[in-house]
Amino acid sequence: MNEDKNHTNSVTPWSELGLSPELVNFVTQAGFQQPTPVQERAIPQALDGVDLMVSAQTGTGKTAAFGLPMIQNIKGREGTYGLVLAPSREIALQIHQFFEQFGAPFGVRTAVLIGGVGLRADDVALKSYPHIIVATPGRLCDHLERGNIWLEFIEMFVLDEADRMLDMGFSTQLNRIANELSLDRQTLLFSATFPKSVEVLAEKILWKPERIQVGKSVSAAKTVEQVFIKTTDHRKFYELENLLRQEQGTVFVFTRSKDGASQLWRNLHSRGFRDATQIHSNLKQSDRVQALEDFKSGKYRVLIATDVVGRGIHVDGVAHVVNYDLPKEPSDYVHRIGRTGRAEQTGKATTYITERDLRSLRDIEKVIGKKIVLQNPSKI
Image (cartoon, rainbow, N blue to C red):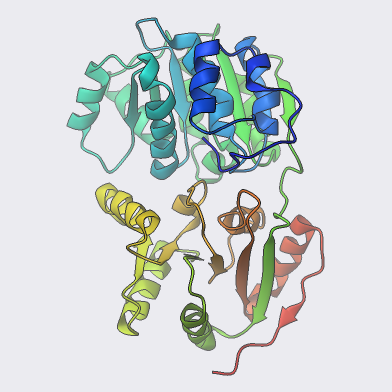
């Protein structure tokens, strides 16, 4: 559901959010004693049927904020009434897992439609007459083009990480999907940031939405120690190698491109790091799922990823995040380092800075709201 099972600052208990006693009991038995701030504020309004624009970072419990109201509104009925769009296959699968955990016990069936999986598997899932469809925009549009799916009966439409979907070029698909829906639907839009592109989209597809902002729209966790190391392209790999030999915990390594991720993985393997794996959009979906599961289980200690698949991935207990390359968007720096220091645990983030990164560094300073001090490279 979210990483903060022990949240105690919320003044409103689950039982006062409007959820059914059965659902409240199930959630608390699962170990979530108190709602997080975004759940506390969004769930009652979602149950009231209003449109929402919610600004909250990943890891704050957003999935339950829309998932629990959707389960309550749909359980006991027959038909497809819920649609959730996510920017990546990994996030879609995590949302699907949430509904499997919290919806399936109440008879709520979910189908997940993502690329990298055969269309025949999608056909089987759709023939189960799911109550909720979780999909990536491109895959859902594939089914719309083929006439495999109709969306006019959807009552709750959720866009998760809307800013990321627009960054990935899904504007046309999102508008196409919205046009297939009934005007009587409820729309919930969740986004870490609200740039102009998200505002324009919201104006098109939402009706008099209530705005909810939890914390700063983009802010770095105070539990993460941030280190910036000045280096060169030539020395960067050796800096990483030295870090991995010293760090005993799990490590998330971000690269800017999928080719860069593959090359870095090969280089690490050639240097004896057989406990490293990779995840990016060049891999088959089954390989991506396996890599993530192997990292979560501890089979691999190091996960190399790109922003496309790295954002939104929830893995408990990540000790260290390494920005091998700076992200294209300054706000993604915060999302990257948010993989560690979760649920009030401490973590560390190390970022390598070359001469060409200095201008981007200034933009990151504006995002995190403090001056960045560069450290000298290690003695290798």
